[in-house]
Amino acid sequence: MSPRPPVTSSSLLHSQNSPIALSPALNTAMNPAPNTYCIIIPCYRHGAALGGVLHALQQFQLPIIVVDDGNDATEQALIAAAIAPYAATTTLVRRALNGGKGAAMVTGLAEAQAQGFSHALQVDADGQHDLTAIPKMLELSCKEPHALISGLPQYDDSIPTGRKIGRYITHFWVWVETLSFELKDSMCGLRVYPVSASLAQSRLSGQQMDYDTEIMVRLYWAGHPVRFVPVKVHYPQDGFSNFRMFEDNVKISWMHTRLVTQGILRLITKPFQAKPNKTGASDGAHWAQQRERSGLWGMRILIWTYKILGFWAFSLLLYPVIAVFYCTAKSQRAASQQFLQKVRQRRRQLGMTDLREPSTFKHFYNFGLTLLDKVASWQGDIKLGEQAVFAPGSEQVLNFPQAEGRLLLVSHLGDIELCRALVTTSKLRPVTALVFHDNAQRFATIMKSFAPQSTVNLIALKDFGPELMIELKERLERGELIAIAADRLAVPSATSATHRTITVDFMGAPAPLAQGPLILATLLKCPVMAMFALREGKQRVIYAHELRTKVNVPRSERACYIQALGQDFAHLLEHHALTHPYDWFNFFDFWQQDQGPDQGKSQSQSPTTPTH
Image 1 (cartoon, rainbow, N blue to C red):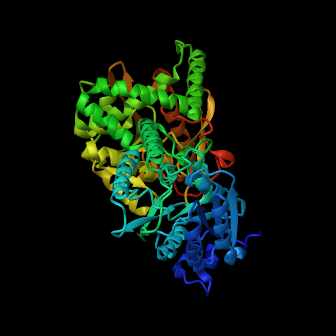
Image 2 (tube, rainbow, N blue to C red; image 1 turned 180 degrees about the horizontal axis):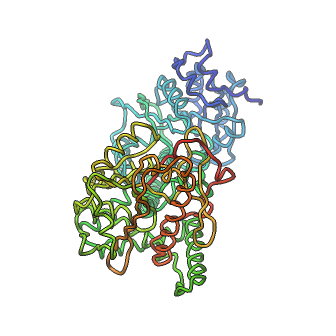
Image 3 (cartoon, helix red, strand yellow; image 1 turned 180 degrees about the vertical axis):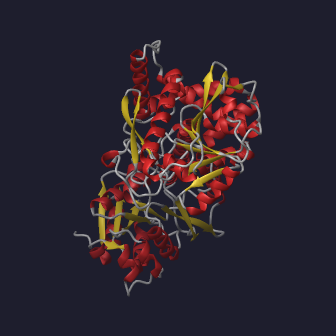
């Protein structure tokens, strides 16, 4: 039969006949292409109850897909009789063999996608759920189309005791698998799925009674929000369940074993996993759109290992973490190899000793050690003059007048957070770090737990405006250092996807630098310096360089000033990168900065948003 044309979320909002009371304010939240909704009912041996469910669903005026999951002839007749009054709006899909609830849902989702639906409301055929929760579920789905909307069961006294105990056991394991209490219930059969995302995760999920739980966990892992709406659930006295006590418990136990194992692996590797951007892509995007590789629980476990067992345990645990990272981070591995090869070529050109057998694994491992250095330095485990020292002449660079602060150009060469910790805790100079907003929040979440003082003087930036300029100048007048990373192009602004850049020579090839941090020096009218914290054996050595002492630059000279300052910074960056190549933590094509076709175009007359 021909299914009825898809009902869109817009028609849900405007239908005069529909009893669904959705908020008119949702009009402004809809996507340009409205979401389209249908209902999927997997049915196995519930043909007698199906008619009542279909009748109750007619009020929602949504197309319905019934999946006959390999029923026998008697049940097929009951299903056909139940569907007959609603044939104009109902599609029947038959599976030749019974595959289980999960298999039936996958069949239904595939049919929904083939008919052009973006979302599917799953309704069980046994009639246990109170359908008055559906309007609220659809409304939430319209607001958050990427979310999985699930019922949160509110049981009456009809629920069997064994079923209640079993659900709490599953809840416990789901909380372990996700390291979160966000998934309040993972077994309710009334939910709204985003069709494409759910089909993608269904390839990895169980196909029987384990499906409801596993698909929710996997969607959660994939970054899809999960929202809950209370729904009353009643178990009819004359009803029956397709749940097979032994077989299905075995499958569910195996499912939890898989998920816990994969959850542990995710936990270990998450500090180094790239989160996808809104389009789901991670590789090939601008470095900031790839987002920093971060995993809060993974980082916490590594740090707690250090706090309880010491550096040796941390370093041992770091090896399998880096091994997984090495095997899975294809684009970062390629960037490391590219950089180390350029280092070899440049060292040969300059007559320096060749870099022997460049090791990407060592490169990644040094990156992992910086997590420890950040926490250890703020906790006082790395002390200036002991585990960390100034390079000759560097300490004198910081001995400038108290009322004359400095703009500090930093980079992702070495560990600038260690510099900030050591300089601040040693009471040499307060350091204010200007950081990209999203990464600052994730970083601060970890650091605040283990080193509360690390979040002091940390300014997360979204927009650059006059209020911030006033605050920065006040800090400079108090003799503070204002640190900003100058080695990466900033995140594109909300009004422009392009950057203002200059081209500098770096490792013998042209490379782009953002003008924003360099323009900031002319706006603040302050001296400029650079600082690096680099590993040398078991010590961290701090290198400080004075780049500019001139603070008033005439407008006619600003372009030359910015170009020269950027090139001098690039020369410093190259010098230290050649001598400390494994402390270079820009794991992308630095010479292209993943900029795309708009590289180098001017975006405005204000500085590019600074990042750290």
